[in-house]
Length: 162
Ligand code: FES
Ligand code: FES
Image 1 (cartoon, protein in one colour):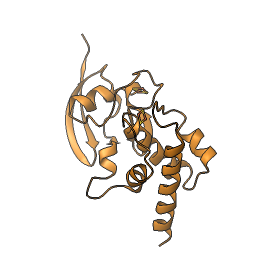
Image 2 (tube, rainbow, N blue to C red):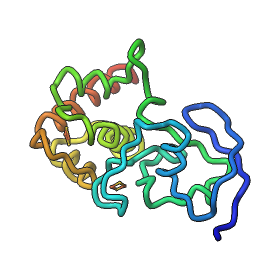
Image 3 (cartoon, rainbow, N blue to C red):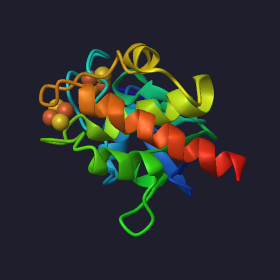
Image 4 (cartoon, rainbow, N blue to C red):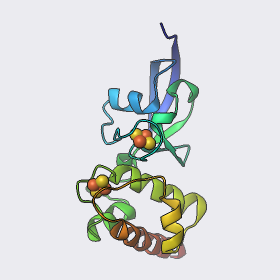
């Protein structure tokens, strides 16, 4: 029998009081709470489909125990932007045809956001390739994803400069 932990989380800007099992992963918690935009793939840290931002840094939610996250901020791909007000990465993924089946896309966008905000605002294609190497895509061949990240980095850099 696992213990339960009472905790506070911020998810996409909304504060939530939750009681979670001590062995529940963040992926399980998010999907249980209805954040089904966070995808479940390998559940062992290999595919990146489950990536979310944890205090601004991309993590694999399948490898993260929710009970260790009291007071943390979680952002899923839906927390970055909306249909009416998309994030530049979301716009660029659509413009460039970087999503086909779309299963990897939430994790890819989150990993790209972490790369652009924490590591390198204007990465080269090679740097994007390395930065997104923890995220697997079976459909696109990756080129359009790298194009989308470059487009978004240009848009974000221009915004930053203006
Ligand atoms: S589902 Fe988490 S890395 Fe694959
Ligand atoms: S678009 Fe299908 S796995 Fe990436």
